[in-house]
Amino acid sequence: MKALPTKYKSIRFRSRNEARWAVFFDAMGFRWTYENQGYKLSSGETYLPDFRIRLSTGKYLYVEAKPDNFDKFEAENHPYLKKLHNFSKDSGSIILLADGNPDFKPYDIIDGSLEWPSLKLSFFQDYEPYIRMADAYWFSYAKLDSGGKMWIDANERAIKKAFGKNYIEAIERSRAEKFGI
Image 1 (cartoon, rainbow, N blue to C red):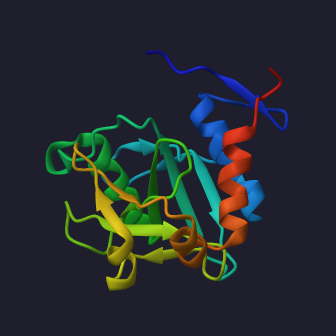
Image 2 (spheres, rainbow, N blue to C red):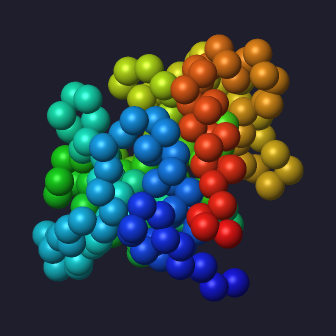
């Protein structure tokens, strides 16, 4: 299925998924840019990040918005993910793989300081620093679906405790946005 280009805040996104992430980032209060700058990597490859978010710490988080069916489980042999790892290593910044629409689930992080093909799990939350690496607390809420993907049980009390009110509202806003339809 071909991605549907979508306009949000006078920006033409390559896909509806990317536009939903922009709505989510706005609702979370993130300062973001979309496809702001391309980079030439030490490997000779070029890379254009989907999003760059400036965190309150002054550091940048790069985000790659991918469809829900994006196959990241063949990471070792995945040339695109290897390119993202090279960018992370060159820039010293982490890259969040935002697969699917914003939701109550963990997301993979590519960290160039780790040996390839290691990935970290992280979660958004609405209190500092917004991105939290998975720990025993998070894994106590995580479940696996029949396809082996990790998600958070939709128990409302657990979600409010784990993510916070602003995060819940950001998810709802991203889901409700109709993009002029």
